[in-house]
Length: 345
Image 1 (tube, rainbow, N blue to C red):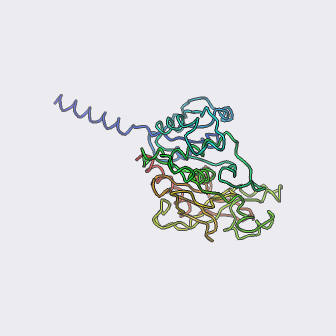
Image 2 (cartoon, helix red, strand yellow):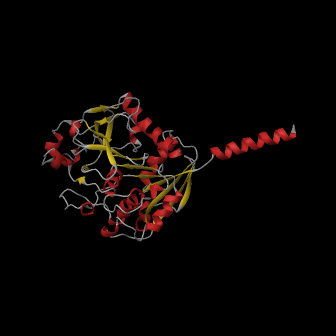
Image 3 (cartoon, rainbow, N blue to C red):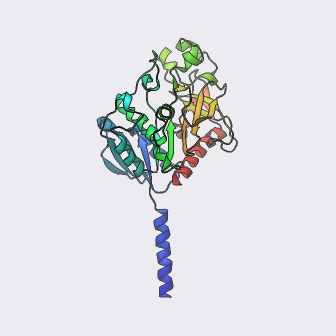
């Protein structure tokens, strides 16, 4: 009986050890707001990973802007958080090859189970071979390492001889949201549309954009023409068209309403990437995925903002009441459920 009891106890302890395996998610640009959004998803059961650790990653010159200690424990979410920094800076002509950051990139890749690239301003157009449009607002030059990191992970048409890191771990997870999706595309050799209203819809003023069909708008410009407006959300909502059998094809929800806040989008798709969602009129690319690495994908809309899960009603750019339907909310829940299941594996 004693021997049997010891075996049972050992089995229980072993099972507990296996279940307690820590999943390390790298969070690029871990601002307080970005961190709080991800912790909200974890606290509210949308990210369904029991033992999650967040590894925030930024350039050392931006670490002070994050306003957080090097490492700490979020008691409410029961999540340990550490902040790692990139030490070196990269010139534009050194992004798509081995460079001063290659060793740092390899260490980060080996220390994490997946990466989440979030939003921000606009990528320097010369990186993808174009001149700068008048409405382009550049991200800080210190963030150019993010594009080089993605190139090291995935490779791209800029350097066909480079062997990407994911050849070692092809199931490694990478999700890019908004700017993160654009960085993903540029890293693989793609280009961007620098201004959706002007380049795609031939609109020259904010007023003319606001007069459009809301399905063809991708950012709320109301505060550019009416600064007295305090009712409408900073987001814009429109439906998207999802490709069958893609990573976003949940429960046959084909046209979910999503929240967007961008004026740029993917133009020419990068190496080994494919389109998996568009706007209803098919003029704006809303999501892409990698054809070689199945857990690599990007979305142009925001599923990461906690406000989407705190309320169901919003006033849009025309001060119309937008109500998120059951299928819209279900899509967002299923999105993070899929993300969690892939990260666990």
